[in-house]
Image 1 (cartoon, rainbow, N blue to C red):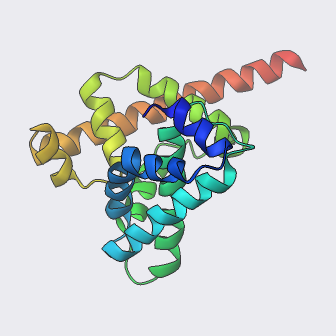
Image 2: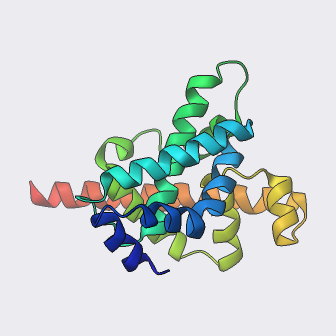
Length: 192
């Protein structure tokens, strides 16, 4: 069943919408949640919560990309659940965030200037400029939180090649953000 039909069923409040949504995207949501949450029961509960959240948000929401919307909801719920449940060791999520934090220029207000929607546009623009394999490795690490060995296994690259690609891509991201910040500062200066 296509997304527009599922959306129509959601708007009509048909229970078939939930069934079709789970059938079409449930496996992808479970894989994503399982990559973030160590307990399979937590991952399954997270997927169910995400399906319910989408059920409750459509309408008035009418996402243009239903699968991406559901995956984003699943990811956010899984991260929230992980944050609440793990205070012991640094998790894979924290490691990923720390790795990306190195990319942000320390002498700028990029984090404040670029709000969530703008940041998504900036990252999309950055990712579009990458080679296909670099983009795949980056997204698997920082969106799905896959480990370097998992990425190596999925892509056929060596573990070291994955780590090298991630390091080089983070450096490229840092340069990209610094240039963006310089342009924004120049635009502000010209405007005043």
